[in-house]
Length: 217
Ligand code: ADP
Image 1 (cartoon, rainbow, N blue to C red):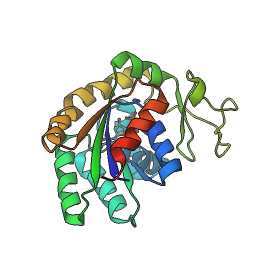
Image 2: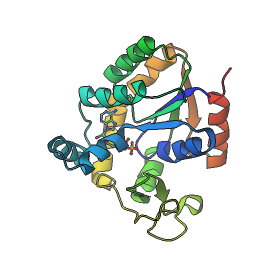
Image 3: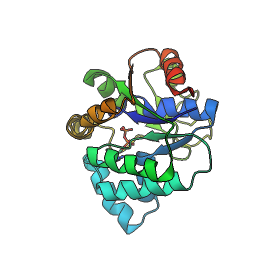
Image 4: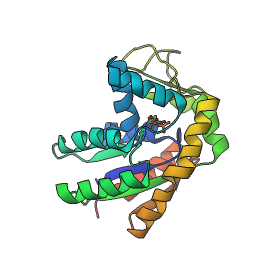
């Protein structure tokens, strides 16, 4: 399978789709949001600074996220990976391009999950996540609900709501997506790497389309 780079507004479903791909195709899931939340959970001084930024809904500086992603990608063995939440700025996209060239990584597809503001707003306010395994659930969706209310199906941990999953912070994140992240679409379109999938379709249809796009030629 090809490496997948997801571009999408917050709460479009990148995490849920990534879980499916990890389980079925052994992808390595690289989520910059998860990496940043791990640093925050460590209680380090740097983590405390990140916590303030994530709670506000703003973006973390390019240098920090690039360092995290570079470290992850260079430590991978041979399996295909998913980039979830990176790149989020044109600057990050250009550095990623350079990274791919240096590491001789060419088997990539960029998938844009398009979805309207109303839908993502509904999804974000119904999202709970497992702090241990990072699986995410949606309390309003029969297929994405946990089996036992409040606990993770996979590891039994108590589910939590993310600090930034509230309406006010979500609006900042969504605006940042429009301003900083949407311009990346043209960058990848020009390179012929971009595929768009409607993220409001039923999950099985989305999975099927992604499998088709990510299959090796
Ligand atoms: P979602 O899945 O809802 O889009 P993420 O978990 O990917 O949210 O990201 C949560 C927060 O982490 C972002 O709002 C931002 O503050 C920070 N973040 C994640 N990825 C990046 C990135 N590539 N560049 C800058 N900040 C990032």
